[in-house]
Image (cartoon, rainbow, N blue to C red; front, side, top):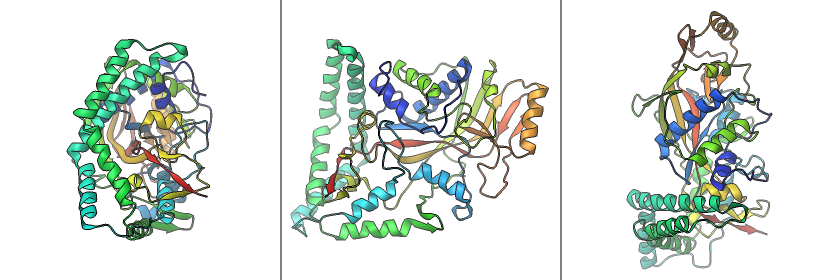
Length: 441
């Protein structure tokens, strides 16, 4: 059950993330505050203060960033696969197909496509379909539509939050919700946009087997066969490019633009079992926790961050706007997605989120005064190649190197800790558009 103390939006944020394999140890108040600031500052940088389409999921430390996909160990392959292909657990009240992956869902869609009687389209229908596809893919139209949708769903979340325990939401909130819906219809082009999506659903389902054959071919071409099964590695571009990095700095005095619902969700997530990151890395393969660093009141954190979009040759969200496919009966969901993070957290669906980008960091610095005892302990752990994690950060160990026994270039000095290597801080999870799913009996 969703805790009654949390609003629907807060519950959504709480549940959308990595499920811990072990109960987390209580975090200190200072650690909670620092991690809350970290999450909100980076999240606001990516999406702004309110968004119900995409969210930042901070990753457990130790996620590999390989120089060469072909040289990864089995453990590294599994860890990377969990990020780029495994569907995240969003609702802890149901089992989401075990470890079903995005690629498996698309493969099931492609293999169970059921072309309708009309195999070919008339020239007029082909032109109408292409115009609809071009309209939906147009960045300008999409941004207006998404901005209007996000504003509307933010208003809906506030109304639902105020309606808990049998209370009616104030008329002022309902008026804001109605106005947001009107703006979405007009300025956001909701009616025109969704009419074109309807055209894609109707005409796209009549275009014959060629589309589905091509989709299967792209899936097969992207697969990497290993001794442990078939993996799909969408290799992100320009990990190590010097372009696109943004510096982030904060300390205990930093004020972050945040709304109260998100704040409560983050603090609950730090403490709870279902969490998108661990302060002490209790559920990652970490031999030693550096969480005591977070207790330093004068701690200043800085790093450079970069979003790297993931491109999958076989992933086309227009597939999910097509009515010609079905899912096997074993996939017992009524929808691929309900269209937004809030709905996908509350109702079971096959693909509540997909990983649309990785978030990389480098030049991490934790500036504070370390005692001689702390430096000695950290240095000892580094010398024996122990893995040291702090929140979502990797401070030491072979996490970010593909070679066996690889070691990061972290340094523990009297003025703090530095970790210059590129590492994966988290991922951007995006909710697919609303996609009802039929099933094959």
